[in-house]
Each structure stands twice: as C-alpha cells, then as structure tokens.
Image 1 (cartoon, protein in one colour):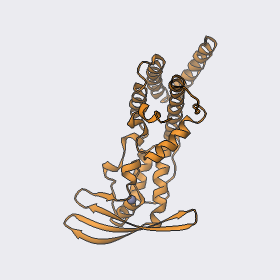
Image 2 (image 1 turned 45 degrees about the vertical axis):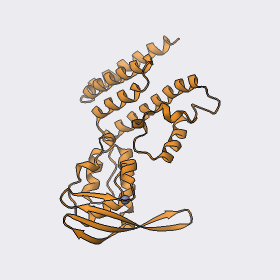
Image 3 (image 1 turned 60 degrees about the vertical axis):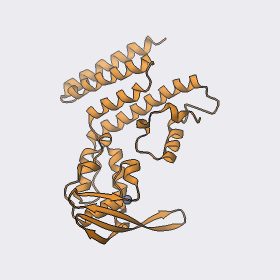
Image 4 (image 1 turned 90 degrees about the vertical axis):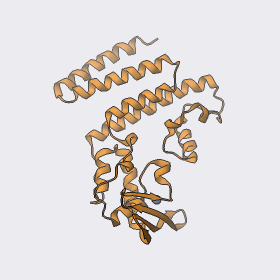
Length: 250
Ligand SMILES: [Zn+2]
C-alpha cells in the first residue's frame, strides 16, 4: 500500500517518525484493509477506520475529564502535564518521568545564558542495558532546553533528558512550548481536530454530515453534563433517536 501515505495528510500522523508511522498505519488499518484491497474499497475503509479512530479518541478524551492518573513524582512539571494532557498522553510523559532516575545530567560548560550538558542515559533493551551519552542545552533566559535525542521534535513528548535538566535546575513552571495543544484534554480542540481530519475526505457527504453532528453532540453534551437531570434527558433522547435511525437503515 505505497500510495497510502500520499492519501494521508501529514497532520494526521503528527508526532510520529516514519517507522512509527508505518507501524501505526498497519495497526490503524488492521482489519479494514488487506493486500488485495482496491483503491475504491480503500477509500471507504479508510473512512470507517478514521471514524473508529476519532470515536476511540473521543471516548479516551472524555474519560480524561472524569478520571485522573496519579502523579509518580512531586515535580511541578509532571503535575502540569497531569492537569492539561489527556490521560493517554500524560501516561507517555510519565514513562519519561519514570526514566529520569536513569538519566543523569552533567554540566559541560556555561556560556552566557546557555549551559551545555552531557546526559548519561540507560535503557533496557532485549539483551540487557544500553548506555548512551547525549548532549543537551539549557537556555536560562528562555527557560528552554534542547535535547539531541529528538524525542520532542519527533513525537512532541518531552524527553527524560530535558526533564532531568529541569529537575536539576529546579524548574517550577513548565515553559509553554512543551505543552502541545494537540495533546490537551480540551473539548474545543477536539472540534477542530475532527473537522480537519474529515476535511481530508472532501467529497464524502456522510463524513461531512458526521463531523457536523459530532460537533453539535459535543455542544449539547457540554451543556447537559453540568446537570444530572439534563444528562439523563440527553441520554434517553439519544437512545430513542438511535433506535429510530437503526430501524430506518437501508
Ligand atoms: Zn532527550
């Protein structure tokens, strides 16, 4: 399926390296597409797969509002991510927080506001422990760190090395640049995401109707969830509507 990446817009695979992209794509299309799938079938199946993905993400995001994943450190930086990120993204940040104990930073030199660090890192690989040394920089004026491991540039998740420098420098306020809009548990952001994902499927009226309906449902749910009676009312009405639409399916 070499034509698949052409069909997809970059934004859809945001934050993934090329290898991760093809792995994710395989997982994404698993059960929807096989080697004999025609382009026409693919477009239909892509629509189904994308819809499922958006639905799963929305369910996960909704869950993020009701259930908080506990912090594993007392670092203010972790607490900030806990407050703003969806649970699944916060867990990815946490796996880096956990690795700080294996990530030891040593000052190499300081020139003006810029301090150069050597970060000694260890990670568990199949046949033991792999040790590595990386270079990282901290700009005191901007309270910004840059790490050569590239995790942040590739996946937009702060890496253990930057976290370890922040811990060493006792950074209390996480700089805004490390908080990615796309990973926030923010309903309004979701409207945008769904719209843009479905924009890729221009000429598919069902997709565009779906996008409009979801937007409306979010608005209604946002208002209804404030109050138990309204939530119950919305649930009952939606279930009744669903019964009608299920029966009228061709
Ligand atoms: Zn790093």
